[in-house]
Image 1 (cartoon, one colour):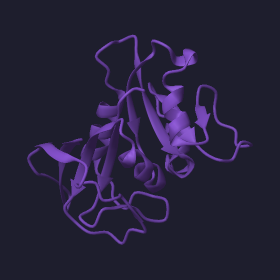
Image 2 (cartoon, rainbow, N blue to C red):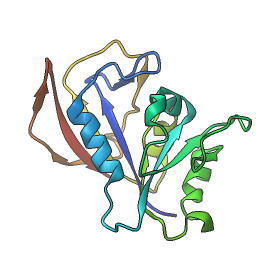
Image 3 (cartoon, rainbow, N blue to C red):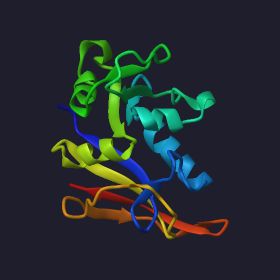
Length: 177
């Protein structure tokens, strides 16, 4: 099975969302997410983004599926319909296996789990999860959804200089297993 990474933005209390939305808007974080999940070394390949159905629903309709990436949505609801080219899986294990199936053979360069909380929890425990791309926001929001504890399994590999956007400070960090 192919190794994969997580990409997430969280506040200083590990908060990642409120009422199924991001409680912040940081252009630098959105750019980082876009560039990390879209960029490939091989122009003939694309990256996979795996997300839960609520994360899919939280993406504004004009921006989904996420362009220039292979979108996989995890949902137990088999009757949901998704746009052409969006793959569906019932569990994280099935979504990861899909990246190795013949239908995507030779097309996939990297795999990113992009949320939400339940999918992150499963991903962190998975032995093939090798890296976390974290945007750490140096503020607290009244979140109702949280990223799981991960520092017992991952070590910080790198950290960017602090950035400030409006009244929010944040930095990018990478953690490896």
